[in-house]
Image (cartoon, rainbow, N blue to C red; front, side, top):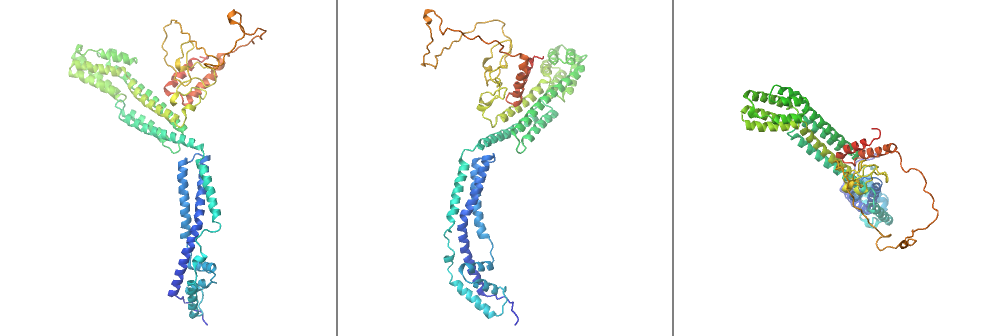
Length: 545
């Protein structure tokens, strides 16, 4: 007899599948209860691992560890529950599982396979009877009897593990963590670097709006500042890299300052020939010699009312030529010279005299305006560098580093040598003179080097007696009778003082002092405006000079 393979599709099969779905919901509820502590445990394990790593390396602060831990636990619980409810199970898998779980002896799985044609049909009547029997058996099953929603027998073990990991995570998070201070220092350094970037960008805007600079000079300054901004904007830039970038930018700006001053002075010297044969002959001679102060005074001494029309014309043309010569290096001076030329041509002696005074003043300051302005930019970069250097450091615990100490309040300043009790003479000159408060540790070095009056004056004796142990302390009994005029103390043979020398030649200790000074200058704790002064001072003490 041929085997039928026609699939039996009837409402009974759909009813049977509906029963399986209801049983599956009950089963997933049971699994959800069982996976709740497991999801919590997974999240707590990850949180503990994160807290432990945060104690070994400065990765995240405590507050973020707590937030991340809560997020990990929440995601673990949600992930476990989603895994329970989203895990796909075919009707055949459910049928086989419930046949075993409910002891149905494969009635449900056989009926389902017959209904879907998985098993060959020898008789459709037998197949229908098998399906009817499966439905009848399923109606007599109480799933709550086999699928309990109460915690399983091993649930206390899981919940105990959750409590243990919760306690371990709490200890790892809330016990004092040495990495917190490191992270706080890093955050302070990052904040200082971010603030420095804003200050450099503001300096760029100032340079572009500075009327005392030519467009080329403005562009050169902006480019130098932009290089520092690019370095500071790099991800994970270190404090040392930031300080090095700012130091290089400051030095480049000072080099630009000297370059601009030299260009202005060179332009004026080249324009000196324009004043030859004019009433400003003294100006020509002073400019040729590089005496810009004298040239400016000579220009101011010219009396326009004493000039003939021809002389005023000659001087006006010379001033216009000089204005054109310095326009590319000093636009303000060029404008002053142009104003003086126009005033001479107008014939107004009073206005011409005033314009000549202004032009002479501008000429006297040749090279100084741009130098001063660019140096101010460099000084502001230096101030930003000092702020970055102080960031992340406790001013009260800063060591002397073998060189200059740090002033109170975290401001770097020149102090005494950190190499023990010996002094390097940084607070006073070789010829005497009071060191003043600057000789104390952490106080700024005095730069008042004015000559004295050459005379002598008496000093005030200071006597501060103190009893041993302080006021009201124990009295000390000295042997002898001082009122009788007899010597106090104990008589006897005393050992003679050992002979020898208590000092070393100056040329042997100079290298140690020079090394300490250079180390302090390179460490960044000495104010930038005092470095040249300190370097020149110790250079003058070199015994080899």
